[in-house]
Amino acid sequence: MKSIVRLLSLVAMCLISTVFYGQIVKSNFELTLIAPEFPQGVSNQAVNIQFPNVPIWGWIEVTITSGYNNQLSTGMITKRYEIGHNTANRGGYFIQKTEIPVAFGNVAAQWHIGEFNKDTNSIPIYHLVNTSNVLTIKVEGLLANSSDIDSIKSGTTISALQTIAAPGTRHYMSIMQDRVGIGTNSPDTALTVNGTTHSKEVKVDTNIWPDFVFKKDYNLPKIAEVERHIKEKGHLENIPSEEEVLKNGINLGEMNAKLLQKIEELTLYVIDLNKKVNDLEIKNDKLEKQNSLLSNEIMNLKGR
Image: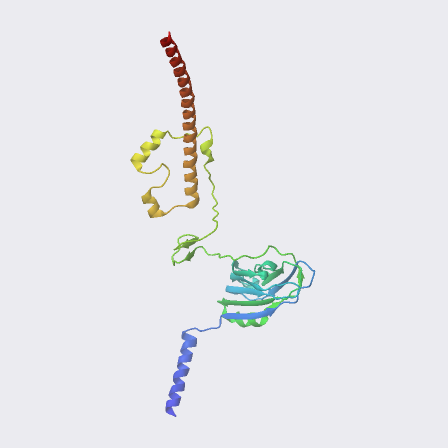
């Protein structure tokens, strides 16, 4: 009996220690809501996820899916919110950032999840088409203010349908992080890939393109200057050296512009060379004609 009492006391002490010293509290929530059926043939319909009037600090995710009434609407959209929000009676502070970690299927083309409205403590969901369909909504989150979790679980509702035009078009997946790494834990740019990328096409925005080479006031380097620079530096002017490239890599857009500049300069050299060759051919034709005349005169003189 004493052993059982000791064991129960030990368990109680562990639980007390876990709760109070470990500070285990319920700060997460998850709930599923069903929206009213969106009517057939009616445009600009929307509903609101209505949260109770409590502060929200942490993150919330809203995931929606649908089915098939008058149009196939399967798939999934998830919108993630980083929120710091005090209600008006607590100062009204508010910040918000969002991203779309998932957007696929017909749902992505037919629905739009709006921004958190700090004035009404709500998130709107807009129907982008006018076909009848149902909507299932999952709301989950992890918040710092654990005291309000029960209020959020029991007090979050879906509003009646409203006629409101969507503020945007369909969602696409968006990662709103400062840096993303693939194959690396330490990305040094917006996207760092430690490996090979494979793509059918790459589009690079640039703010400069070297067609200035073809302008009349462009100072085209003399061939002798180009030769001298190559002998002294071991690479073309304004093109990074092998050492620099191996150390720092290259900027694709910038390097393509520099290479095009060299191609355009080379084109001007070829055009100039072609003109000189044409002049030489004309002069050579004249000399050949003169030689032919002289040969004929010499032959005539010999014939006399």
